[in-house]
Length: 196
Image: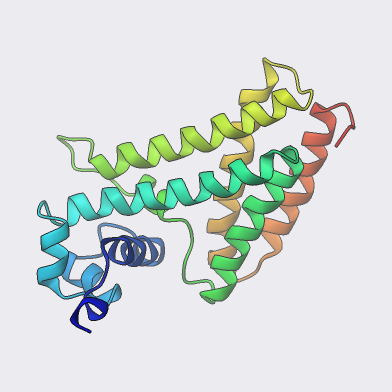
């Protein structure tokens, strides 16, 4: 019985990713991250002895990996299927949170880092974006996009979707994501010579 009441390391990481997606990293403490995950502070420090810095980094990696897993699965069907899965994921998060949550990777990426260091969470955010771009690039190339054009289009897809998520939260409307989705599908179709 006691084992089931002790939160798993993954649950704490997932809870931290969720809170970071809502408030950003700088606005949250390790205590708030633990509370949001319904974990005792002692358990949180047990799993993350380096504190907030370690937990935040793992939360960003967790989010990045979760998105990459979805992309990897759907991109087998083609770039449009991958884009649609990417959009469906974020639509669900934004809508289910009533526009309070967005992308924890983006949340960490837009915050000002300390002047004298690059925090590990920011490095993890850059790695997540790079991973998503590489997956999209590979799929675009595999489905007929020009080898040189594919990386730029993949970067445009990630940047557009991430920016649209922020706009949706600000406007409390899914219209920006819908507009971006429509335009990205046109660009992908063009890059694949219409063979979506």
